[in-house]
Length: 79
Image (cartoon, rainbow, N blue to C red; front, side, top):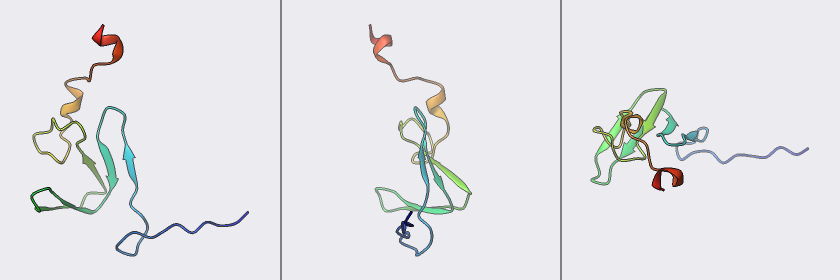
């Protein structure tokens, strides 16, 4: 068996781990700096940062668990 070399992240360390939660946020191992579309830099020094994917969060781009209050319609809900 041969060892595979994983590419390092832009800062020279291990790559960041991103976990996509079905129906929920994207979880990123922190700390991390987020750059918004307006160019604002959000420094998040937590060990895990939740990014909103549903755009319902009042603190977007960070998740405030608003996705839990509503659910996305499924094919069975639409009929």
